[in-house]
Length: 241
DNA sequence: CGAGTTTGACCGGCGC
DNA sequence: GCGCCGGTCAAACTCG
Image (cartoon, rainbow, N blue to C red; front, top):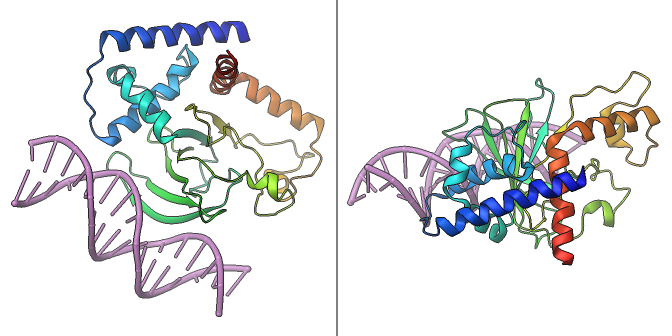
């Protein structure tokens, strides 16, 4: 599976290089265009096969690949998709970091409000994130991280701190490579297993085997997770080379 | 009372 | 130059 993923990654990378060589002169447009396009690239491009991508407009992602790559690398932008209960209307994404909300806005392309957060764990940390529900699937919350944390993850400094409730970190927001992962919060654990909230309030609680298996099955079935894993591994391999 | 959230106002970039 | 729009500010408000 890893070999196949690496091949897909290399094929896609070669295609991108080829395209960039043929189309070197793309002018920069609006920032919003870059962001939406980068979402498309990250949502489907990394996977190599785009069968389950949440992105729909592949044409747009092909229009400005150069800007996409540069923007993502320079601004350290990454997106994470959180699947939530459809009844849950909050825009709280528990990624382990401490965030302070400083604004909310309804944008034109999406009826659901977009919330703006700053990292409040360290005063000098300038990382921001935007959280908004997906237009296509309101049960999916899209968190866009901008910048790089200049402090360790709260769970590493204060492992028992209740504020660091959610230890599930699908993708390091500070990763230099843009990546996309979807977490599914909606899967109910068996009645004998602890609830999500119990897990959150007791990060050190021992996880039942059945829940571990369920989580593993869910993750391995998720193509986006596999793609993110493949990207991380191949990126590491390339870095070592 | 302090920390965090809400929300209307304001600002700057961009397209026309 | 004007208007639109996304992002940010800050006073008012809420909550523990």
